[in-house]
Picture 1 (cartoon, rainbow, N blue to C red):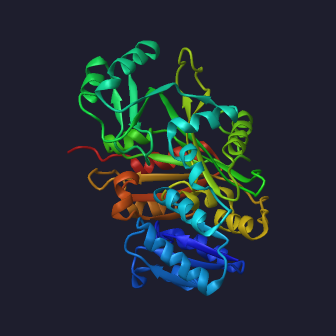
Picture 2: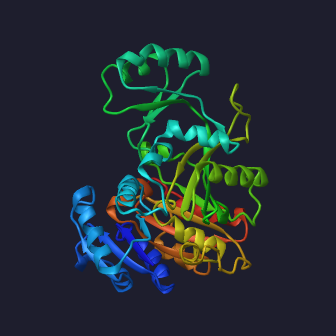
Amino acid sequence: MNFVFVSPNFPRRYYKWVEALRERGINVLGIGDSPTYDLHPRLKASLNEYYFLPDLGDFPKMKEAVAYYEKKYGPIDYIESDNEWWLEMDARLREAFGVKSGFQPSEMRQIKAKSAMKECFREGGAITIRYVLADGPKDLDKVLAFASEVGYPLFAKPDVGVGASDSFKLKDEASVRAFLKEELSETHIVEEFIDGSIVSFDGICDSKGDVAFMSSDHFPTPIADIVNEGVDYYYYNNPFELPMEDIDREAFKKVGQGVVKAFGIKKRFFHIEFFVLKEDKPGLAKKGDFVALECNMRPPGGYTPDLIDFGGSLSCYEIYADIVAYDENRQNMGLEKYYAFASHRLDRLSYAHSIEEIKAKYWDKLSMEGRYPAHMAAVMGDQFFYAKFKTIEEGLAFDSFVREKAQAK
């Protein structure tokens, strides 16, 4: 089996996907924009071959790279990046080389455009946030009429985009007028503002679209606040085998599985985000209900796959490789589960406890700690501490200790 892995060098810990695939006898053929000498040693050791290409957005050059592999190794079975930036490129390459194991270009809109996702969410049984699309001044009256229906504030972001960058909270008519004063650089989706925390339905499904593994990440601090206001924060992984304090676990599981089917996801990792309402939203849902945010056809960002592993006492990297190789989850799912916390600190803030104090106090709970690379620090924070606990309360106490601020002198 020949698996072309696009951008296996980013994020840095993606070598784990490659190792797991290679261990199952799969030829893993890399195409990346890092020079060979800059690859993680474990990535370099696990790839059958690596093709350096400075610009992964150059479709003719990408075709040349895949054609080289096809000529040398035979038909290509998979082309995957597990990276939001290259999902469309992956699809174009699959179409060009007749690779059926993955989304095709004709399916891109429903998995890239937030507005198009809503139909699949509704088909899967999820509540969806009301919205309108806007491109500039011509849409002012439409957006103002929408605001009169759902109330202020509104939230605007690119209809096709990654993360919370280039997003805006529109608090009143004046801010709407300012936002739409000139033509926007791209179509934005303008939604009613939801006061809630984000909870994700993460997992891996088989060739029939059945969920072979599921887990959940909980983000009490809105991602937009983290990006736009530069605050430190925490989030945690909550295996489905453990109680969930912020959401109806069984209802969430049912809707999550329904949404996976509705999107037609097969043999891949998914990261599907929902808002859990902190207060009633007339005409939409009640406090504690969950409403669909967006569906991402890749693993959760950063080092979250590792956090999932710590919480579940498993390897989601190996589960994915099992699905690719055998179309079933062959991992031991019966090991003890934990609430796995990720607490983050910012260099510009002063904290009450040193890194040494954190390590000394939680030496038996810490699973991983370190610093994010610069390209991730802008969103994730500078310093991270991952630890696992048997109760939510222990995890919250850990986060309080890690992020406690130093007293001003």
